[in-house]
Length: 182
Image (cartoon, rainbow, N blue to C red):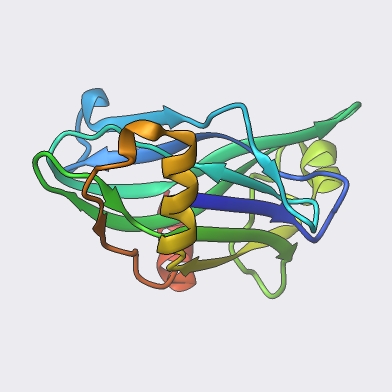
């Protein structure tokens, strides 16, 4: 999967992802809540966002891709964000799966919409735009371009069979309900 993150609300504070959260089963134990760090390298996009390759080494089973936690900061302000995804991924034995491209942008929040990040610390979260912003998330199928780029950067994939199972469209209502109940 590939991910592009950007902040159109407070453009000086572009999001930098730290981890993607995956949950196995009911996620009743710590072992069922998996956090995968993003690579330090990214590709700059033409509009100041960041483009990332994401690889998740998962055992076979059903998982929920909860979301992405990250940060942004320019002295003296440092803000945190959570990009909610909440999509099911079914990993089959001995498989490599392409689940799509996620394009997530922070935009101005209106009428009680889901926040892009917590409210506290007040000044930092406001300055970075995460408390006053919300997410606009789009999932798309960029299989040909993404797989070509993956194979270029990871030659071990050159002859691999890669399944094509793109995530469904992002459901903002579902994400808002989850955020409200947690």
